[in-house]
Image (cartoon, rainbow, N blue to C red; front, side, top):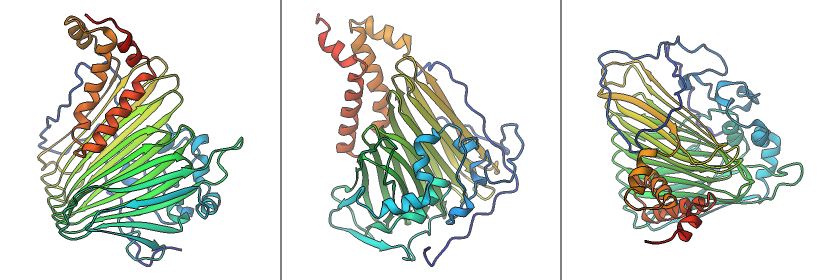
Length: 445
């Protein structure tokens, strides 16, 4: 059953240029450069407009629907699925299995909220659901069709939260020889009403096969920080579709942290009204055999809006695979847009692989600035030499480089307890490479 209010599908733009994969190369610098490229005219990457069809290269031309029949099970050859390990995520494509699993307690949701926040359980037919946009892929539409009740978290108008709202999503299923018996779906609606200010933390732990829809509405003059932490156990499989609308002069800080489990996070960040601001940050640490995929998409369709997308990840171990596909659309009406997207990957060991693809689609040359950058590489020999020349042992120097690589973006989160937890988790991950142990055993001067 669908909600009574259904948004109309977005009309595909008439012309569009698709991006191209960034070339992997050694990183000469691990700091973030948000310098802008001013444009006098429309910008393309030299490729023709994306063809109309069910699966297309341009994110703006993707089919969106609330009906699972409109978005069939992918085969893995489609552009948006070609990096994803299909066998692992296949349980989340099966609507009937996910619907049945959602009726069990394989995944539970608990909310701890301070004063100034309303927490509700919504029936599927609630008219507040489904207003931010339709699902964009198979796991998203299955999540929409399969969830039983939604959890709504609302920051009241004018509320200034003293502490963060914590939404704990916990998986309780251990997969058997044939995989997960109870794949499940969930749905969250997070609303920051006019003039409110606060932080919502989504914390995912345990083991489950879980597909999730997250709708986010930021009203004019509201300031919301949304942090989603994927700290699942190794066997977990998680797909999530974030659909965001920043209204008027609202401000959103959207933070994705992926540490455990196989994850695929698609974040669709949009604007409704002039003067919106979105900052999207991502931090991930990909271990041996792990797949972490992040697909942020910023749609600038309104005038004078601002966005920054910055994701950083480290990889270690055989068959560790990180994927980042960052897309930005500047529509014909989006004059005065100011946007930049950046992805950087630090490969710590042999056998790890990172795919990084930034895409920029511009239909309006009357903008403040737009640009993108991507880099994948190993330790910077110059940085290591600089540190070792000052008497720092190699293991400690490598540790400092990794922590420095992440610290710049972690410091932007603005939630002290999350920052501390994240840096502690990164230190723990470094133990797996022997960096910490080697540091402790290194002789002191």
